[in-house]
Length: 178
Image 1 (cartoon, helix red, strand yellow):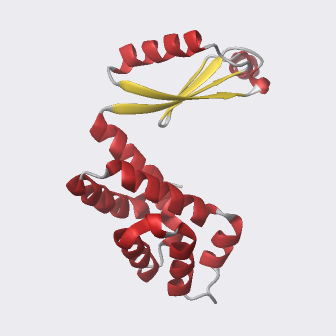
Image 2 (image 1 turned 60 degrees about the vertical axis):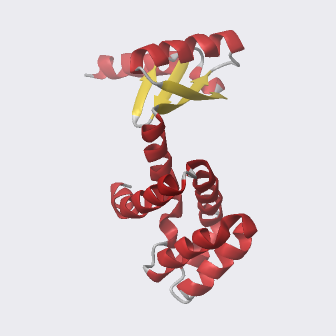
């Protein structure tokens, strides 16, 4: 995964500078999300990886599926990726772009996963605590995973705070084995 990140970084940074210069971070965020979803589709991923398929043909198909919202610059970006045999990097480029955007905007993207649905008040309390801890605006996405048994798991970037019952049980079992 780190190799993909290393390969994707210069493309994400170039698009980020372009988007920042145009004052269109949100637009590029949407374009890249759409492109990443297209490239991540199993059929498209097989097509991109197939050495018998010309990269220009794969790029044209991606641009066609993305539609007119992609725009000329977006289509040019896809072509640059095809020219360099990097279409498969689109999901990683989009993720890296989002990280650069969040950093520039002073925000953090958090995923809060709980065993049971949280009330809006509970979400607000967690977001408030994260905002105080990190001194940044926190955009939270909430998910439910019954396998956690109880508690919450909060993921921010590569940092995970596991306060779930399942996590505590796993840590206890590991400690008992050692």
